Length: 261
Ligand SMILES: NC(=O)c1ccc[n+]([C@@H]2O[C@H](COP(=O)([O-])OP(=O)(O)OC[C@H]3O[C@@H](n4cnc5c(N)ncnc54)[C@H](OP(=O)(O)O)[C@@H]3O)[C@@H](O)[C@H]2O)c1
Image (tube, rainbow, N blue to C red; front, side, top):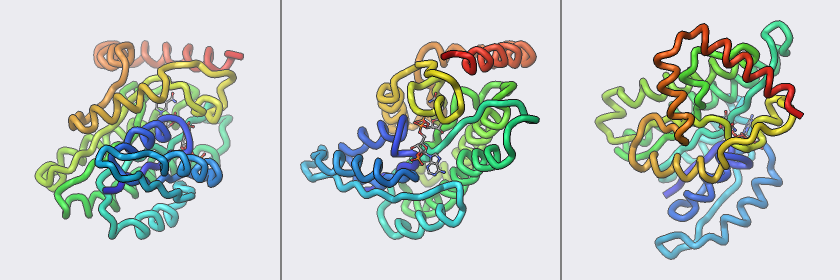
């Protein structure tokens, strides 16, 4: 059985790949070819729980291009793909009047369009086979009313949560036993913050811990996965506190993060 992981060159996606290597052959997707090749070498040494050796292949691909998502699907549509993890994603900091349009559009292409397309392609075959798991990486941002300075990112993650939740309840998905879930972590110590343009690293949960919890909950078929006590607490806070207050707190938080050296 095969697991396809986008965003496997770094952070949460890479740690999820390490865990799944114990039971699955892997397709590792990201743009940085060399990193993927080195990671494949590591994973190709792993002895799976059934005693066979993990076979990991790199699939260098820019998922912001729809044609590349289709290329990925065509390459593996006839293979027994049991798991798809849509982990590729990025954030960006700045006010709407300042951030470059191209930067925002490419964020939307990765965070939304690629995740949507890959889910749509692979889920059809999973439904037909009556088995499969799709784990879409959202964020705690997904259930917040939004955030000044990270408007596009927050909105993109709200899309991921809403889309994944909705399709999980569609009869074709539910009746086939295919799992669709969203992972909603708070801050995780990955390259994400650097890519998003924040100075320094705000820290957060280790990507390994986040990935372990995510995989455990995915196999327990939890539809919305929230790692960490504090983040669970914010989930309930977001339900009861006024949106205006949450937006103000988010603004203060983003400004602080942008200034941290
Ligand atoms: N870190 C956090 O605090 C946090 C919190 C909540 C949610 N998340 C979400 O978790 C997911 C993983 O992020 P992370 O924290 O692990 O960050 P990360 O370490 O920066 O990893 C991002 C991954 O996405 C890949 N990627 C980005 N653009 C791509 C593209 N156009 N085509 C293919 N792959 C692309 C990157 O690979 P290449 O650069 O090699 O292409 C990398 O493997 C994201 O969706 C993020 O929004 C992160």
